[in-house]
Length: 109
Image 1 (tube, rainbow, N blue to C red):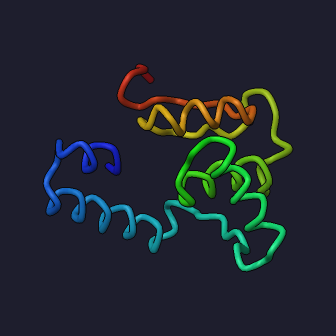
Image 2 (cartoon, rainbow, N blue to C red):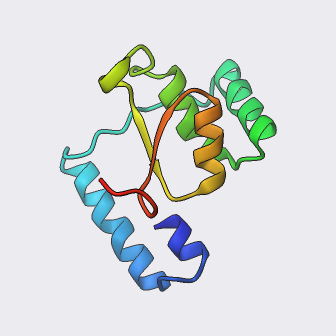
């Protein structure tokens, strides 16, 4: 959604509608979000380092941080988390950090 909205491939109304749908899935418990305590200096420092290392924005760096340092960090092989994105910069950065990725616009399921 973010990439399509940024490239003006979808309207603001479609972007917001999709965002509300996503929020409904979160509120309904169908999608779980791991809370990261970004208020802690050590956490923010790690995220800031990812921003600088890969020229990312904070939100993208937070996604990588969550998957590399969060509760799923020790999962391996087929259980290893997958970052789903169509953002090529984010995909490259995630791969450099050792994450599995799926580019949902390029690759088939």
